[in-house]
Image (spheres, one colour):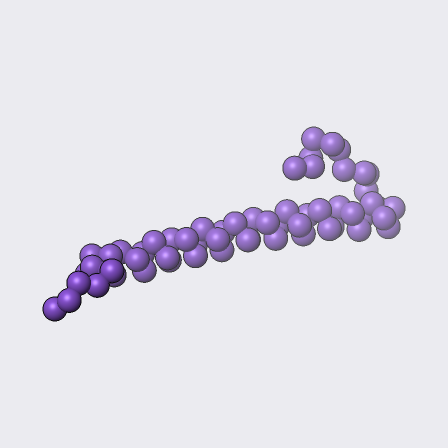
Length: 60
């Protein structure tokens, strides 16, 4: 059997690494969406005259 770039161990571990990366990316996107949503809501409230302008220390 000729040698291949990926050994059996590599093939076994690659999906785990890939799934971990995928899960991390999904969490990151979820957190990002929450922040964007909060920011959008804050801007809408401010433009519509509801609520106070956001305090500087609330902006991240």
